[in-house]
Length: 119
Image (cartoon, rainbow, N blue to C red; front, side):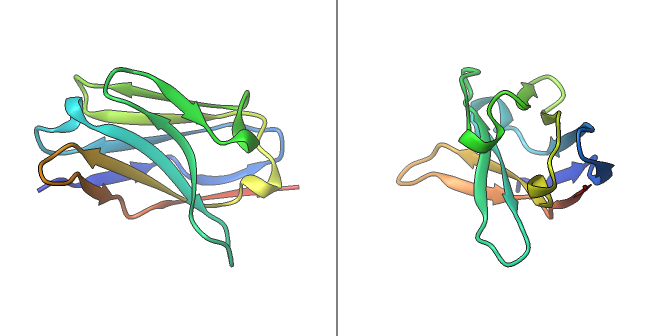
């Protein structure tokens, strides 16, 4: 069973930075696609950034150039470096692990960490 534990959220002023971490358990991390999602109050959860098992990354347009996703397979940890934060980045940030499988992939979610950006 996979467990994901996020950390690093908090309150920061606009223009500041935060680094989120997500520590995973289990043996499938290296094969998994990892992602960060966020959910602002009253809005649907949205994909923020993704990193594949091969290290390819992709970002939501709203965070391109400001956020960087990375992974450390040895530590089974995925990171989200968030710079130049804006009030609209406020929300609960969730780590997601997608494990390839047959007949279908399996997804796991962390409990979330709150990010609040004040103006």
